[in-house]
Image 1 (cartoon, protein in one colour):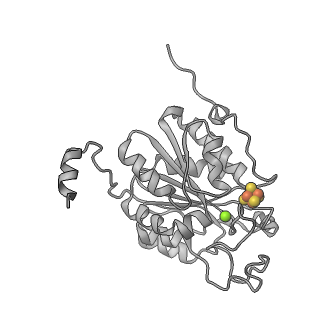
Image 2 (spheres, rainbow, N blue to C red):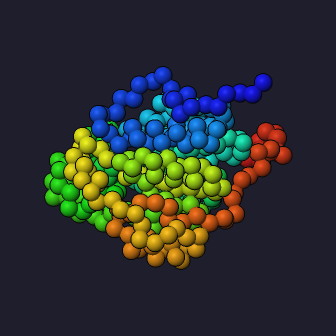
Length: 274
Ligand code: SF4
Ligand code: MG
């Protein structure tokens, strides 16, 4: 007897999102469930791992395995899970604060390791959950936070350029205000074998009402996507941060350790005995 195909609503959990009305993350949740349904992935074959922050609540809202974890450590947890369970489709979700500040070092090494993971970063250029502090992607002159009344005064973190330099094999940028592009990019990211970095412009209308203007500012990348890292670097350097689409995808060696460990616990104890 054939199993009926799942619809996107079948991937939505009974937990009601507590995001603010108008938050960009609703569109990301919808893109995730649509992409999973499109790919026909069984729910028990999918795991969503996150860190801490508004966007990191995503696993609770998806009917799959999920782990809402530790601030900035989502990629470390996801890499461990993928190392132990290669058969799972592992998605990682978080925000700009979680992924680019405290989790920045994990991002570099996840890119270079190129495990078969999909990392979705919902970037709203602010720490939303802790009420509006500047994050690594906040513009230097942004003055709305009481903690940085003169603006952070620091150049922004450049997610796509850093992911490319660190060795990610798939880099794309989506926007919550363009849900069909977002779903398509997510399908491509999941299908890509290797570390897929999906940077999503996802407005926080509560602490960054100015991000309503993103709808008028976004535009497609000037050039077609490439599988050449030098070409991708040129594309990213020419980007104003509001270009949308696939930037780069290349088949590079994927790191996947053997899931079986040949050493016993007694071997480890002997190795580390003082
Ligand atoms: Fe979304 Fe911002 Fe509200 Fe957090 S604070 S749920 S990021 S709108
Ligand atoms: Mg944020």
